[in-house]
Each structure stands twice: as C-alpha cells, then as structure tokens.
Image 1 (cartoon, rainbow, N blue to C red):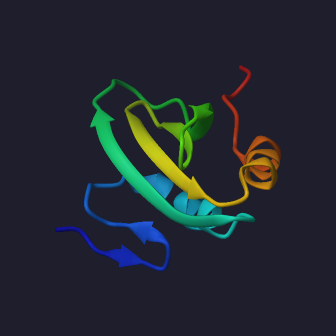
Image 2 (cartoon, rainbow, N blue to C red):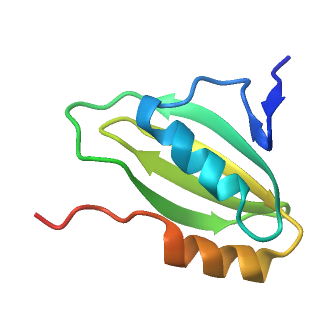
Image 3 (cartoon, one colour):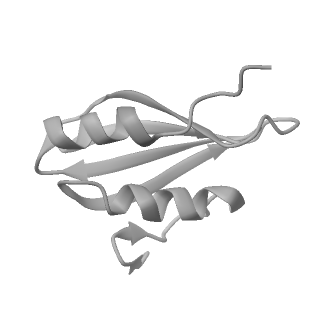
Length: 96
C-alpha cells in the first residue's frame, strides 16, 4: 500500500523533475489529493510539461511529459476553481 506525503500519494514512482510540480498542484484550490499513476517510457527529453486530459467524477486526469509520460489524477471538491488554476499554472510544451 502506498502512502501520502502532504497531499501527493507515493504509491507509484514519480518522474524525477515532476515531484515539485505535483506538490505545487496539491496546493491548488480545492485539491485534496494528487495521485501519480502509470509511466510510459519514452525517448529523449522535451522538458517538463503537463496537459489536462479530462474531468473525472472525482476531479481531473493530467499527463506529465518529460520524454516519458506519467498519468496523474487530481481529486478536487471545487472542480471549476481547480480547472481554472490548472489551465493558468500548468507548464505547456516548449515552442522551439
């Protein structure tokens, strides 16, 4: 069984540079938990960025990208406020 550190669940591995971002997301309005999920191995590094995939019954599904991709589930009791915060604060892909 996993454990939580603050609001971030530590059951699964977390992509190295993403830990600080997950802790920042945990402080967003209405967020009660951040649950990292599966990691799909990738090649190369494209910098850290995050995409909001869709709303779930409990909150949101995000994808963290660092070359590899990790699913992240965000539990929120204030979905409108959380979504606005995520759209404003999540790092987007680099425009090279």
